[in-house]
Image 1: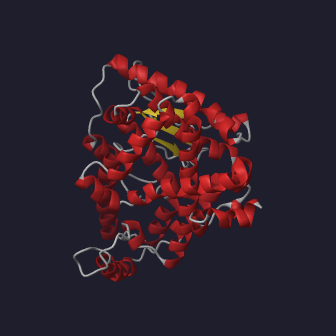
Image 2 (image 1 turned 45 degrees about the vertical axis):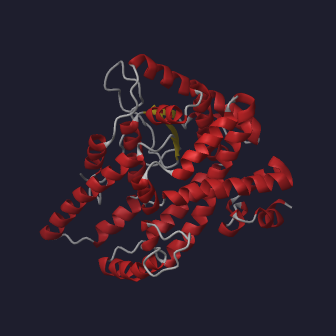
Image 3 (image 1 turned 60 degrees about the vertical axis):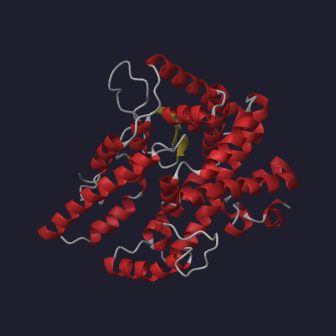
Length: 392
């Protein structure tokens, strides 16, 4: 497997897809007719959600052409894997080039590189197989450019089949993972039509955020690229950082002589960060909290008018989100940083509601003026501070 530039890649992406496809658990049992009905209903709801979100938020796409260029794809679990592999390849390319520059041209190094790429491909595939059962929908900010779809495996194929790439970055696309939506609506025992529209409202909010705020995608991409540029590819430095982090990890765990309190310990990503990366990640965390919290507020704000059972859905869904599925699920959520993701929903929603209560939706929408009007990591926890700095 080689990268688009012809050099050795750091991940065997084809192997990652093959591994994930082999490991992913099957979705809920449905007949073909039921599956076709779910796909058709999700497409209708995605279209309807677009206008609901625009009306509630007052946000409009900068151009109809830009909105039309961000497609809505209904995928199964393997389709979600393929879409995310394509996105990963697009965003990590600068890091791949950095590793290529460091790698010597010797045959031994080339052999070790090939072995490493395959090992990493298997690891990434296993991770994607796990995550593919958790995601209901996703706005893929760093999707590759069109064409985004491969030809279906058969004329009767139900689901969209994203390409693996590696085209350059495109305008984004919205993914709805039909099997996972059906699984959760059954688990919660809620009205299927209401739940599907509720999910579409959340994901369509993300699509509106990026199509109505032209600079947002480039800003986030710049921050991510800066984060990757700060990555230290020296194995010795990485080992030293891991050794330094080992003690701090133990200090926060009950029963190991640490505090034993509820302060969350570092995730895997945080362990290997440099100080510059932590600063960048702080800004990214604030932005992602804003985007996720805004989507949660919108889906619940629109809900009463178009989703009759929205209160029941929110209560049951929040209980499910808080408890996790099982002990293994909780451990993996902690290690992969998914607990931090859940806090983003909660912290961001509190921020958005706090600002809207003070200055209304029009005042809140000043957050989309420029990167300078985005909330800082501290302001996410202090809406009044953001209002004092920006909205007044």
